[in-house]
Image (cartoon, rainbow, N blue to C red; front, side):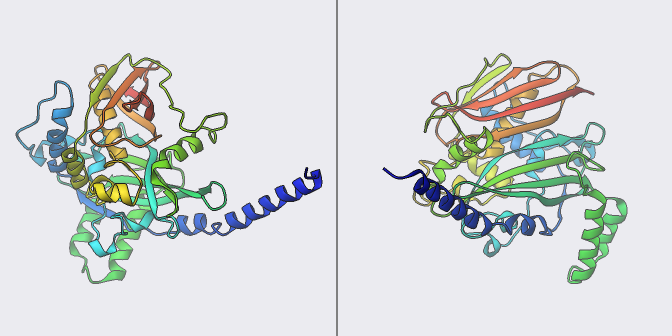
Length: 374
């Protein structure tokens, strides 16, 4: 039997190894937070929103697909959560990572695999974005980059903040007149816009119509991506202490407000990928999913789960009640061609719980919503 001294030496060696391994990634947080991500400009026309309504209609109870595209002069407010369809970077294909994703958020090698772990969204009650055809902008920055996990199997949790707002008439005019080849002049306009909309605190909306945080988890190349959901669940529920491997997280309440089951198909996933200009192969290529990522089928988009939950919730809100704040977590993968059940329950005045269950009855997505009259 080993002596206590030998045991402690082993523990100390493990701790030293852990510190060394962690220190090898200590540069990530300051480096990623300092990244200057270019603003993303977009024209808020009704087309993408219209196409999403058409695409979802077959999956929403009682919904009828719209047949006439609204005119921008109707000045309709951007529906919640249709902001997801706008402000995606338009990068040349060679500039994307091998899995089709945006390199601006990636910590780099060896963290090549990614999954949307959740996020939160704050909507302005007084200045919602209009579908008027006006030029708008997304100012994006990395708020946090946290390394977690045992040495050799670390994960990086990246918190991305996106601030969406209309351009002023002066900014719109400046962009229209600037020579696109004059990099310094373009950069100055972008810096001015960033300075107007960015805030030190993430709960300060300033002049924005939407402030969103996206939490993305990056795994090392060696890790099986099918374990991403388990990893995210453990990290976001206290490290998984006391939980058996593979244990199913069951809902802790009844779906008293709504409960609706769909079976998503590849056409729905393709359409959502197209509308969000998302080339991530886990939503498009079954062979890539199985052989490269270790998944059994195409992955249902994290933001598409969020979209269904918000659409179904809003169909069950009271008159004049509007979504103001949402926080959600993607706890386990959801797959194409498998049942997913979206649920909701009231949790007090202006408070709701929403979640999604897989075919095993386990909770795959969960969130909380705050509403207000207005």
